[in-house]
Length: 345
Image (tube, rainbow, N blue to C red; front, side, top):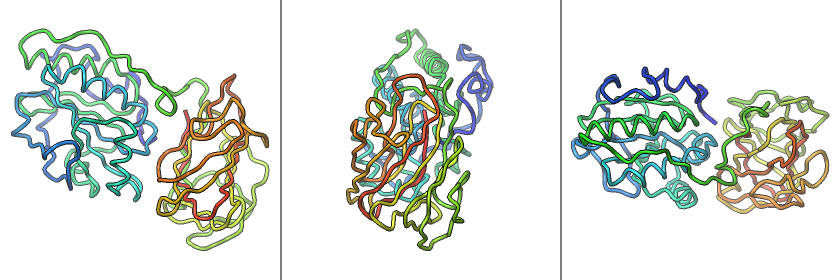
């Protein structure tokens, strides 16, 4: 969702090393900035650079509604479990993009949803983000037993390179072999790997600060109610219908029955959304004007019915056959829904 680099060979290039390089040639990229500026910690007492000496630390910058982060979490969990007894400490740094991701109740709900049991530093003020000079979700940094950053990788994918770097630094720290092989965690729903070959649509924001490809005939009005209409759309164009108030981060459905239409080309369509104050909002989804049937996502049924409650990413479409361009529409049957962004996979 938020990565600006694809996670292919570029991840190894960004680290400055070959993917399979031994630890002896992993360059020292600088000292670990640590986590002292965390606003609070989840699953752990505060962790310090001094307390982590002698351990290999995998630092994972993430935020809970980011689809790229969501799809990496099964691998991060698997690495934490596999290497915990061999000297690896996984530390998540939760740095929010949207305001709702600053809410600790939302973060805790996401951690339960994604079964995260490793320590997480809450970084709602982005102080850890700035200390590390980070710019991406997700971003991974490997710190050796002496507290030095030795490897970094940005974006989802290229899991083999990441795990081999973990193994190399653990072997260096332990002075001997570590458990080999590569993890292959089960993934489902929104955590399944994207179908990149068929993906022709990219992240699209609803809030006016980053909105692009908006195609309602009415101009997007900032922070004021307006009635919109949804015309015919070309690939990656979207439109509002009914009465909306569009703010900097999100659009708010200002009447029951307000909707969003999007013409997309991808296997999966997700919407980051929530009901105001977490109140449930019923939704109705159509594909090309019909119920989605077998192409429904994990958060709706075959008739297109679902409920948006707490603010998070909702998977609304997963095409089961050949991926092709489709016109997606969602109607919010109750007032007060907030729609933040579309992502695809």
